[in-house]
Amino acid sequence: MNEQHPTSETDVHYLDEEIRSVQESGILEYRSGQLPTWCPGCGHFGISTALTEAINELSIGTHELCIVSGIGCTGRYPFFAKAYGIHTLHGRSLPVATGAKTARPDLTVIAATGDGDCMGIGIGHLSHAARRNVDILCVMFDNNIYGLTKGQTSPTTPNLQVTNSHPYGSPDTPLQPVRYALAVGATFVARGYSGRPKDMQTLFREALQHRGFSFVHILTPCVTFDKRNYTYERLDERVMPLPKRHDYSDYHMAMDRTIDEELFVGLFYKEDRPTFSEQMDAYAERAREKK
Ligand code: SF4
Ligand code: MG
Image: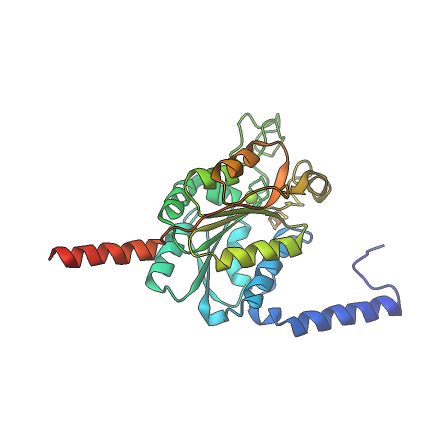
């Protein structure tokens, strides 16, 4: 039986209620005319919905929003959203997002990037956007595989995981995105899971309200090409909230949490530091004084 199809009058009524509540929530305002082309069950649906809910909660208008992406299944996201959208080259969402935010500081700028896009060819850009504290939100959709190109090993694929490019198990040590973002100076670092949409929505809302570079790492199943590691079943078991005693203002504690075996979700770290635009304004001021 397909559980997605109504089987009784009660189910039909329930669906009607669901549809009405989505219509009334206002999030449909943020949908473009194009239906998502992601595979049924892909975690990217949950991420885009949680992001849209957070944007709606903050009353950010579609004309005040710019979504920038690179290449991969995540790269398609701007097509499905009603906002300014830029689909850039592989790994280049962050420099383009930096340019967009610098030219139009009034816009809310979101860089949507995948594990291959962000941790592979684009990793250098992550370091520089983070250290400069560019006031943008970077959402990394991490399914630990190259999905669009059909299941090859990515920079976050675990050692010995069998993939289409490594049928005898990946020989590499995976990168840890949260640890990396902390190491290069991101001022807001969090992790969510696409199977827990309400928690993701809270993280996105807080990240969008943060002044500076926000990096939100989302664990998300690629239901088509990863049947072993980031499945909903395994992530449901492994993901757990950060301990209540976690202090997100403590950098060393945040780093220590990334070394623990557990897959913690929540806000790891947050600090206030001048943004890239503020630093550039101060620089221009110094230059004027010297003349
Ligand atoms: Fe999602 Fe994987 Fe399908 Fe891409 S290939 S849309 S990541 S399930
Ligand atoms: Mg991927």
